[in-house]
Amino acid sequence: MQNIDWIRCPVCGNKTRDRIREDTILRNYPLYCPKCKQETLVEAKNLQVTVIKEPDAEPITYRVQNSQVVGSIVFINLLPNV
Ligand SMILES: [Zn+2]
Image (tube, protein in one colour):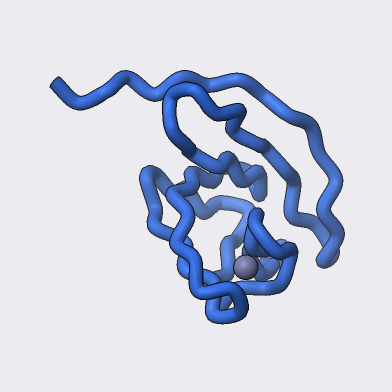
């Protein structure tokens, strides 16, 4: 059985209206949160969601599993569009 879960908003932690499966791959996906009405650019792979922020910020990677957020912080730098 596929593992499917709602993507949580990295800003407020509430569930968004988007779901991902174990085999879902998102790239530069604008995740919209209906709660705090913010749009966050994310990537997702293996139920792992990475928030893409400004080059100076620290992106957060968290794991979505059984409606719990467990995870770690990773550092990813986005190359500016030239
Ligand atoms: Zn939110």
